[in-house]
Amino acid sequence: MTKINSLRGMPDFYSDDLISWSPVENKLEKIFKAYSINEIRTPIMEYTDLFKRSVGDTSDIVNKEIYSFNDRNDQSLSLRPEGTAGVIRSIIEKKLDQQQSKLWYMGPMFRYERPQKGRYRQFHQAGVEILGYPEGQADFELISMICSIINALNIKNAKLKINHLGDKDSKKEFSKALVKYLIPYKDKMDEKDLERLGKNPLRILDTKDLGMQEILKDAPSLNNFISDSANLLLSSIQKTFSDLCIIEIDNTLVRGLDYYTGLVFEASSSDLGAQDAFIGGGRYDNLANTLGGKDMPAIGLAIGLERIISISSITKNIEKKVVFISSTSNIAPLAFKIANQLRTANSDVSLDMDLTDSSIKAKLRRANKTNATHAFILGDEEISSNMIIVKSLRDDDEQVSMSIEECIAFYKKI
Ligand code: HAM
Image 1 (tube, rainbow, N blue to C red):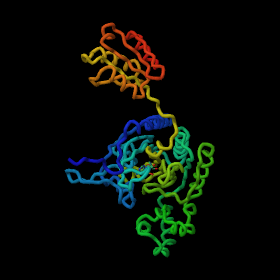
Image 2: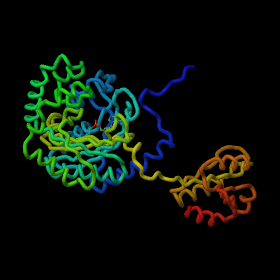
Image 3: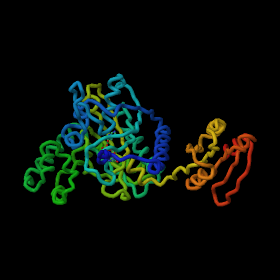
Image 4: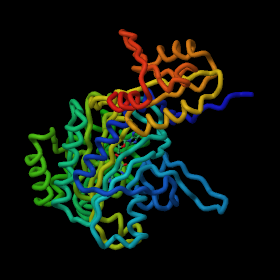
């Protein structure tokens, strides 16, 4: 039989990989709690129209990267490429779009991108959405949270770029001016930028083409189209948090999703390589309305977990581990009873019951090859005397006989 492999860009994670995940996930949850944010879980699959209307059918994410298929009822469904659309869909459905909420989520997202280091087809995000608050305080709160995350996870060489896209009208005016400026350069544009010129000209500001970057140097600048209050918001955010993290105002930052208006931001670190953004987000005041809800101002962010974990230097959890070895002449019910008591007494230790039928000697040899600190041995003799041998697996090799009560007390302190 031929073997079946995993899908490209959709890696499996074993505990050696995951050992660095849980400290970061736990720390993020703690930060969300400290900012009084509540958890929400939405399905990983939604109607395709949800993403077309929110992320935008001119965006690369919906145009080229979405995983869509028809279900048995011939309805087009998609795996979520991001979490914001599902959260807003849910808020509208529950009629919560007229109140304020602060929500966070964590989970897998799916984008059919070309896999490379830091870019996957199934990846994980932790996201936060602050709903029902117009431009102002919520923007400060979210940037404050980003600084907390960067500092709590000890991210080095991090930079937060911020920009303001204006409201719907100023975004339109700026697009018009940009297209007018760019039309004479049409023959110098590659296929991708030509397509953007027709569909979503702002995205051209994001071009990787060096020739285009040169042309854009003299293009109209977004900050001439946005209001004084928007420019003031950017500078006062920069000033407020400058002692907590490096913030740079970048008028070319546009983001790849269509729903943004107002403040947008992206945190990156030079430690990440080509895919250097580990947080992205911004304000999206028109999304609820576009999805059939009431007007609801909103702002949010998403953290790329694979990326932030790869550069976070918070200490990894050191696993405490004990191997339990019992006599094999019979299955010893006492072994399972004691093991159960031990696990209840201290759930921070992982108790690895050797489930093989091999001899005590062979089990001990195996235990020595693990990272366990101790082996608890319950041989035939110990079973009859109600004792247990506690053997150190570190250099001293010391071993003591203990009553079961003593052993439990010892286990509690490991
Ligand atoms: P985004 O910028 O598309 O924003 O994604 C946020 C982060 O997810 C990125 O900065 C990156 O770290 C990570 N990411 C994106 N694509 C991949 C991939 N293929 N492989 C690995 N990591 C990836 C959003 O998704 C918006 N929903 C953020 C938001 C929330 N805006 C408002 N609220």
